[in-house]
Length: 75
Image (cartoon, rainbow, N blue to C red; front, side, top):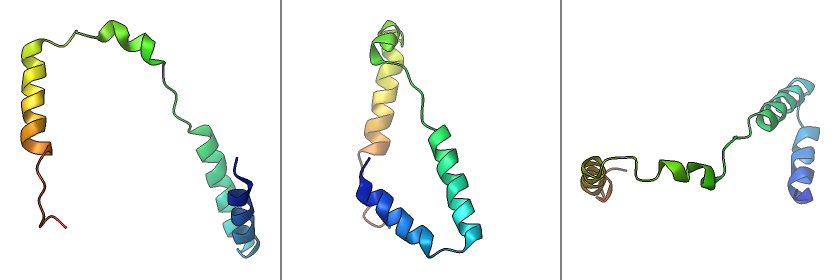
């Protein structure tokens, strides 16, 4: 763990009211319990090739049509 981050958090905590310090503590506890759980990729290899090629082609076409375009006016 980068101690400079911990030090910065502590400095901010020192200037907060007690109630906010408790909220930060509760948030930190919640974050530490919410770490994502996954499986190694090798466990997923058995699923390789299970999607029919026709469906893969449809997904590829949809991605190319909908995701590879930039709308400069979007922002």
